[in-house]
Length: 110
Image (cartoon, rainbow, N blue to C red; front, side, top):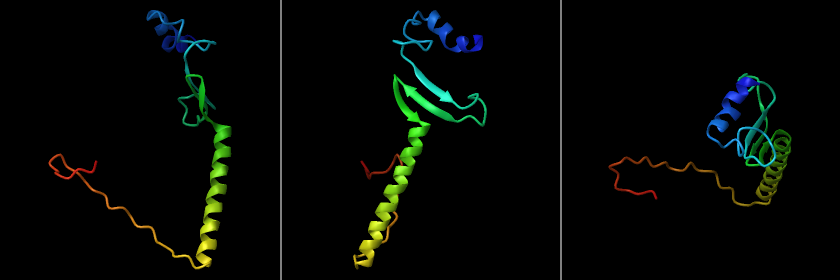
């Protein structure tokens, strides 16, 4: 616990901002990551990420979103197949030509 204070609460106290940051309490600003294991372990995975009190990532929500994306992708592909079978024109995807600019280039891509 002392090691955690060494990088959280103690520096906040030294900077006289421990009333705003440095520990997890109601009313304080915090960015928080909840891990499945020790964060330094190669087996650790993120469960939840909270930034300024707002949840930016939640493992359970992400699983649901990934499932929704799979369903939407399948729906779009099925719709494309139906249109193809009706005789709609099929356009093959084409790779975009990449422009490589140098500091001496007179062309502007912007």
